[in-house]
Length: 379
Ligand SMILES: Nc1nc2c(c(=O)[nH]1)N[C@H]1C(S)=C(S)[C@@H](COP(=O)(O)O)O[C@H]1N2
Ligand SMILES: [Mo]
Image (cartoon, rainbow, N blue to C red):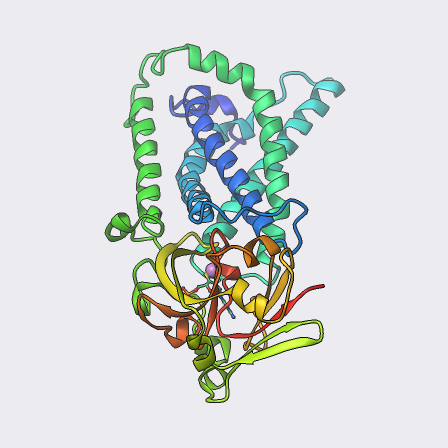
């Protein structure tokens, strides 16, 4: 017995011919995933040097949908890519001088970092999209930090491999004689790869695209939930069933020494506005709703808050990362931003945030605070 060598892997499915055709598709998925991920991370920063735009209202819905769809499509692409190149792991260094050995070791290390970080990104991303958290670290911070490692290693990898890719793409796909016992041709594997990526896209895109819902077996919570809208955290899970249904509930709006307390009846007596706005969850699902309620700007006027003020939004929830959010001035001043009291013409369901919830255009779902308690204007 001896350890395998790269020459032992004779299948035409290994090597640059396929790697350089699957690689670019994988690179595009990673690039789209990285850019949309940066955007999503920035959108969730409480303080933003460059204010995040409030228009188009469906912008975050599109970019986060793309994020999850390209990440899912990357899974079969990465698996095939690894299959095409793994015999290189067994390649002996061509020469035994120190400089060559060091370069080989460096190249392998960079590939190791790339593969490990890419697998980490896809596994944590998919787990998060299916609401499974088998870890104790903060998902967003870690997923964001490792993204930089992955993209850095990817850029290096592309730069190093560009000549090999160019050379392989110049040759026809089936340039060498078919292997005697090959049960699958290069063309065959390539077709199967595009098909698998296409199926992955269809299976998740329905979380964003309503008419794809029926084929989206992997789409998480696409059509369910009361009032035709999915639920992420229920009132029971948030521990607010009691406080959210208490007859004494009132929304407090505070600006410095001035404050008002508005019961649901008080809020319903104010001018009501109706806006069509999506909930776009970071997990990739999104759905549009017709929301009716009071403009946040009208409430801020009640306590004399000037335009351009950030607002801290607090919910009745006592623990959990989403119980308070910062509503940046641009969102607070946007005419479409509401304290919603109704959804689809019916009073807001308890799980959608009764007695009142925040809804703003082009804002990550995780910041659309439910079960409101207070709005505090920041100085
Ligand atoms: N107070 C509070 N608000 C919250 C959450 C939460 O856990 N607590 N979850 C957020 C998330 S992650 C999403 S996607 C939306 C979902 O709103 P929906 O359940 O009405 O569809 O509510 C947001 N508002
Ligand atoms: Mo969410």
